[in-house]
Image (tube, one colour):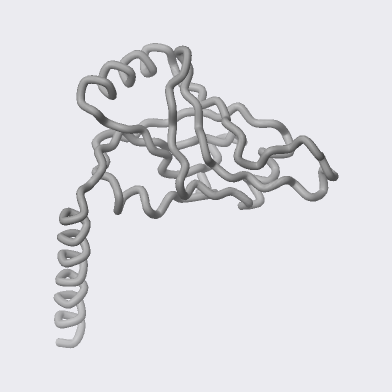
Length: 148
């Protein structure tokens, strides 16, 4: 399962409560472009509309060998394929607790492109500063132990 793209800011900006997996409805040229690594998840999010889950704001650049397509939109909305019972559980959980859905990574699984996404709660600014401070302290401790 090679990882094709990672949303690095997700774990810093959000507190991850639960991770899930879903497929993506893509065109053939988009699949080839994603497998070539021409995708960005920074700023992307998931939205529920009319009983379906959609990935918004993910950037998939056009696949050059497929030729020029005038109508191609690299940041179009893409449908996320999940089981209906998972979707119903997410709807209840998200509205009850004020949570959000964010993409974490794109990877391949048996030739298919899968999306790992999370139910998350946004961190406050002071929580982010605490995380930075904790990371710095851990790094200093590792350096001291390595020096001995």
